[in-house]
Length: 384
View 1 (cartoon, rainbow, N blue to C red):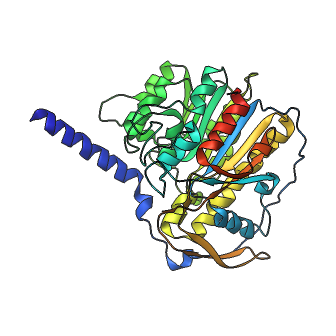
View 2 (spheres, rainbow, N blue to C red):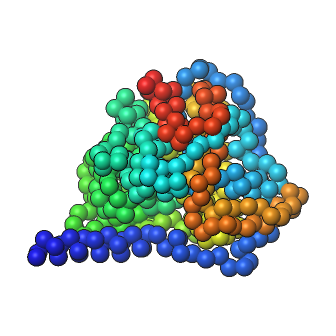
View 3 (cartoon, rainbow, N blue to C red):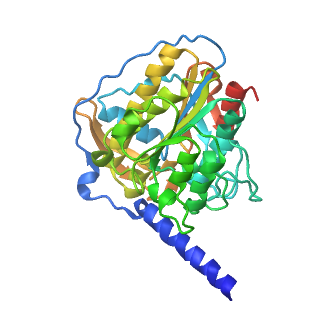
């Protein structure tokens, strides 16, 4: 009886924790969020396409969660016809289906991209038998490379979690947080402080991280000024909030991660997620999608600044799936106005784009399985 009661309490606790982090699934856009009215554009630079080698020393993998072709075009329209993303001239498409569903979730989609394995919806880097599958981040660590994760969601959310944790259910946020202590990841920045500090088991994972030699930062001013060493950056109790709240959190965090990781002469692997493109699709908000796409594209600009100078860095940009069945039904390139419409409040099964720049970029063309994105990165970075 006691054992049954414990299981019920655990499930209820997981449910409440999940509910706190997944409120975006029930968000509904107001009528004034259906049209992005436009605004000032930012300047987009063109970067050289010549590199120092044919094999990358570093891989920076950028995932626009929920980003389909229309989301890209909405961002391009809003910035008056150009994005940094246009510098990534090798382009393909990824089929996103999971092992058990025509429409993937972010956990199965993330696992396909992180580990090159198709699995069931909800799985965090485990296979259909719930056995752990090794991720590119873990393999990079084993080969002496530095590693990092940056996200605008909680760092324990499905996409970042699938690169570092191994759990049968994406909603096991506290167990996912504990998995960070089992790795030697150099940098991680995102939300999700409560999963590390306000836990049912009483552990304070931040203190345990400090004992392992990590610098801990809970605000962007501190994160901006850290240039070396190991960094655990947890900037919010839960998710990092919309643009008006988090401001330049994602570009600054990405720059900090690059500054730290690039000090390793052997190279590095960094995954950066623009999480909330997906949330705009769930909400049916054109404004939300455009804001997130422009923020994500500015991150791509930061990464290009580094990669073009470095000459040994492969950039890959893709999505785990599309969200919202989003269509642009009106717009104006001169003003940046975008009018959107939605066929769904959830994920769709459509292929998503894959963009690449740098040594090995030519591998990422044509139609491919999402697992192939991982396999191509691993072969180029690790020779496997």
